[in-house]
Length: 479
Image (cartoon, rainbow, N blue to C red; front, side):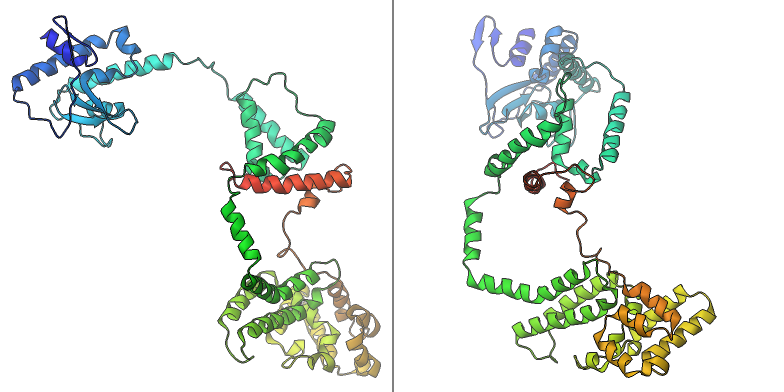
C-alpha cells in the first residue's frame, strides 16, 4: 500500500520496486469510470496520512506549491499559464487548470470556477488548509523584514507639505498633478538621505533649459497618440474646403458672442450698456444663422432656438437687477434716435422685465417708503421729461450725444437722489466672472508678487507649463 501511494503522489519519478514508471496523462474525454471502489477509499486514506505527516515536515513548508502532491499531474495544456490535466487523489475526477484551481478544488473554495470534491471527510480540508498555510507562512518569512514605524513621521511630513502649499501660494490642484505625486513617491521609495533639492540658480537656469529640450523633443516623440493615421486625418481636414466652410459658419454666428464678452471684459464703465449689447448680440447671431439657412426673419429656425436657449441660460446666471437699473438710467435710451435704430425698440420704463427689476433695486437700496416714493417720483420726471430742465432743448439733444455720466452731471440737479444713484452705477464696469478663465497661464507664472523674470525665461516657463499640462492629462495617474 505504501509503494502504491508513493507512486501516485510522486508523478515526476516513480520508483516502485526499483523500476522507473512513465508519467501518465489524463484527458476528460478518454477517462473511464473507476471500478475499484475499494481502492479509492484506501487511496484517500493514504493521501490523508501523507497530509498529516507533511504538515510538520520542513520539506513541505519549503515547497511553494504543496497541494500538487495530492493530484496526479498529466500533460501540460497548450496556451501557457501553467495549466495541466490532473486527477484528484480523493475523488478520482480528472480536471484541468493551474495550481489555483487545484487549491480551490482541494480546499473546497467556491466561486473559483471549479467543482469541489463531494466525498469529503470533515477533517480533510482542515488538514490541507494547514499545509497550505504553513507553506505561505514560510514564504512570507523569507521576505525582508520591514522595521515597525510610527505614523507620526507621516503626519509631520504631510503637515510640512500643507504649509509649503499655503505659504508658497500654490494651487490646490497641484495635488492632482502626476508629476507632483511621482516626485514624492520616488523620494519615499528611495534612499535619499543626503539628497538636497535643487537651488535657486539650478532651477532658474540649468534645469529650465534641460526641461525645455526634454519637452520639445523626447516626451512628444514618445507620445503614444502621435500616429500617422491622425496626421493624415488632420491633413485631410485642412485641405477640405467643405470643412473650412463649416468653420467659417461657426465663426460667423459666434463672433457677436465673442465681441460682447470683449466689451464687457474691460475696466471701463459698461454696466449701463449690457442690455443694449445683449440685444444687438442676439440679433447678429440670428442674422448669421438665418443667412446660412436661407430663411426669412419670420420663419422658425430650430438651430437658432437651441443657440438662443444656451445664451439665455448663461444670461440668466450673469444678469442682475443692477443691469436693469443702470440701463434705465442711461439717457440715450429715451431718445428718438435710439428708438428708431431698430424696429420694435421701446424705452426702458416701457419694458416689463426691466421695470420689475428696477423696482426691486429701489426696494433694496431705499428701505424707507418715503424715500422710495421720492426716488420713483424723480424717475418719472426723468423718464417722461415732464418739467424743469428736462424740457430744455439742449438737454434733449445732449441725451443722444453726451456720455451718460457727464449728462447726469450737467442736467441731473433737478432729481438729486436719482443723480447720486446714477453716479454710482454709470461708472461701474460689468462683471466678467462668467466669461473669463479662473487661471491665466502667463499671469500664474509672471505675477507681480514673484521675482522679476526676463522675457526669455517667462516664455520658456509658459512653453513648459502648457506642454507638460497636455502630456500629464494623458497620464493614467491624472485625476
